[in-house]
Length: 241
Image 1: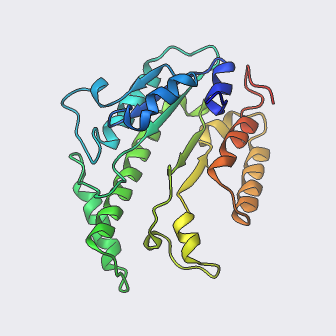
Image 2: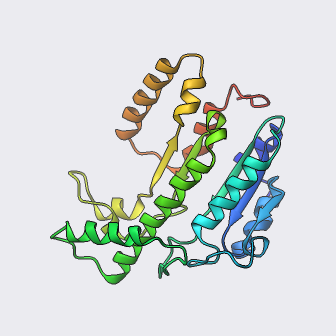
């Protein structure tokens, strides 16, 4: 289908794109789609060391993110920067235990469950909590590994689809079953190093606070991501709205 999406616009702005996935990128013809939209560097299970620790679909989250950080840190600065798409596979049923799961993650999950008297989850729910906590660790390690590039980075985190299970989301005053099925984890992060490097750090912090307040009061979706990112990047070289 001759459609254009966010990667096409980033290619137009001369950003170099790389896709990382622990399994085979040919799944659902993801590699075909990505190549058709300008992403030429596609790194899947076969492009990573055979000794890499594994999880549900292939190479583990921690290993993928370490590989991505190594690529970014070892690359010469591109004329207009680069972007990296990392698709994790650990958070997928049946939530197989990652090879590189630290014991402190299991301790953390056990403590959470023990501290929740009303917990009524199944063994699948326990495994899901374990992989959520594991991926949380992998993301924190990625952030630390990219330390020297944080002053020119924006992070976007999100699920590719809903969990289809209301267990993940605690009841609220406006809680509905449909709403619980529709929600995904999602966040856009501005590193402190990026904020400090801006011309007016206090103004930027205030804008971020106001934006968070607005987004907390209304529905928004993955479909809003392209416009939000292009708006945030609108002053970067090569990008015009």
